[in-house]
Length: 408
Length: 225
Image (cartoon, rainbow over all chains, first blue to last red; front, side):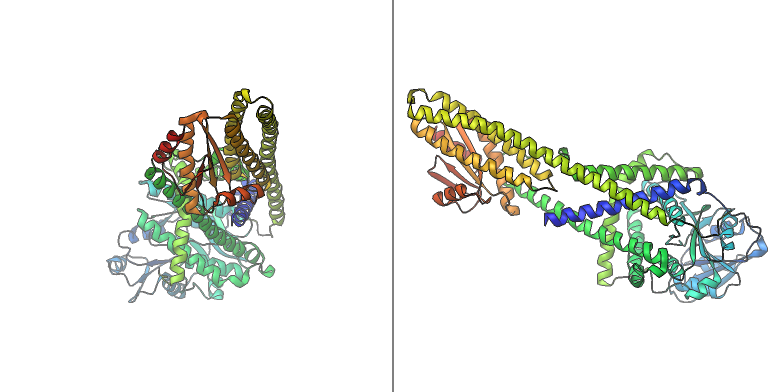
């Protein structure tokens, strides 16, 4: 058993080192091009599709943010599609001028709602924006140039957190910075694997070609990105284009959101499993699908190994303490393993150092857009505690997937 | 301008792979070196102890056969040796937990177990021939026990450490692993019918199976010293 565990750990370390080196190498080669923009002279017709469901508190602000965009007004069509809201969303939208408001009397999920909006749109480019996301004034201008490349199927932007009051919101702000940075790094190797709903643009022709958003997938923004890549188009990332979004404000909401991301991720990996190491699908088959698959397998295996070892130690310690107390022993053993250097202490320290370097480089890069709060303590908390929650959510997601409890 | 021409990045994947292999191998080599270093540290210590042990054995032989009136020196040498072997045993146990890549430490553990078995016999001889007033406490444990036994053994070890601290030279504490496939220890096991751990053998005639509490062991030792 211990040999198997040692093997798993060494494999995990190898894969982690490879991921980190790859990211750092891509970064060093492209570090001067991170914020490169395409100043196109051509303004495409854009249909902005905003799916809504019970968004009375923010829909107006989102629409206003879109109306205030620095983009020719005659080139933008705003379509709000309501997914059967029970609150005042529909009532508010009906009163807003300059938009097309489409109402569905039934609730059929986000993917279906977006598809409905796309079907009723006129633009060559479709911008999908969540009803609680607020694009920066110049974001469209910065993103649109990427469509000059006929192979571009979608373009996404840097998504930042708007509410950064509580600790959990600050932690997500750091996470979102690093996600944006990481996504831009992947952009340099044609591997942007998600086009988030907060703000992403799509070439309508490509969306139609791939059959739109998958209504069965609960992370339609991951699935559509994979579908685009599978069909040999590119997803691009414009780091300087910004969109702000409201993130979960408590752990329960956060957990639910992450469950959805993970379960959707599993669904997507399963759907595209045949692309695994398919050379003809280039980066999608050779890198994205295997990367997702391996990281999922490793996270889950690593978690079980950790639970096994930790659980064993916990039971053993519990029994030891019980026996010691029952038998009049007052000296308790202090584990000294950590003080003895081994192959694992070396690798763990190395990986931790690289994680700090990645975080530092990422935050330094993203700092051009401003963190908005003093991040020192939060970054430390993020590294030491927040990241530990990931495998727990992943495991819960796996459980939900197994029992078939999949819902948005 | 955003580049439209096909971007070249395939080399980065290979470079990252080469870099990973180099760092990974360096790490593994470092791990091997660390483990090898620990083994050679144990080996050196073993050589020193072995030398001292031979000296102690000869003294026992000498006083036992030629000068039975001057046993004191042999007894002291034996006691000093006992402490060293015991401490080294604890160190090996800790090193064992941090060795993941090599198995060489198993050999060292066996060598130490043999030394301790030999030492036990010597202690019996010294007590019988020289009338030494210490008490032999042999602690039989399993090197690879199940979870519950390990917890019991850990608790028993701590209790025995406490007792050793209390009685010092009066108590000869000899921990012996019973599952390391050493013939000499197997013979001892059969002789005293040791079939579970932890088991304690006091002065070769009192066998206590299972976890023993501090107070009853303390009373038993006190009675015999």
